[in-house]
Length: 213
Image 1 (cartoon, rainbow, N blue to C red):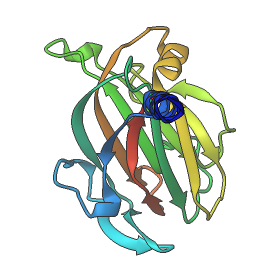
Image 2 (tube, rainbow, N blue to C red):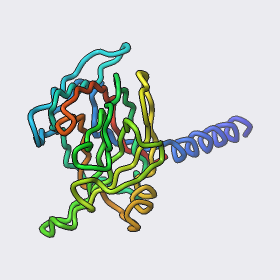
Image 3 (tube, rainbow, N blue to C red):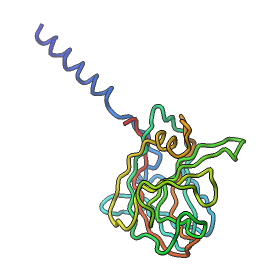
Image 4 (spheres, helix red, strand yellow):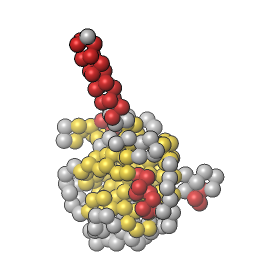
């Protein structure tokens, strides 16, 4: 009887732990050397993206020299199930003498995008851009200089030269920036770019994943 009761208690404990565990879906499995599902999108010359070992782990390195190209992964994510976007990143330096709210200054050492597609109504596509800003204060939000369908949110600002880890509630951030309560996103992208300022930038991106917690 005592053994049966003990087994029941153990079963309930582990069942509860399993239910409470976070569910994760990796979209950028850089630590495994996987770039198969990422496509290049070029705007002005090619930023160099490559897998490297940095600080004892495999990550995605980005080097921009007056260039602007990104990597995009088209993947539909249910934000009711997996609302949190997590990743780590690091920049070597930020850009000098730019105004990121203008077209001439729309450059960033590191960006992570989440995209809600408008489908055939392409003009309804909306993009939330998380950036490592050079000059704007952390928490700032502004319209992208080229389109009002994209909002920019500064998560980090200024020189860091060390790894930073992000944990964002995409649904809440999207509502804050656009006023809409979305339930799905359709793509994730990353970009390191310096085409407007004609400067150089170096950045590193760790694994990118969505989670339930």
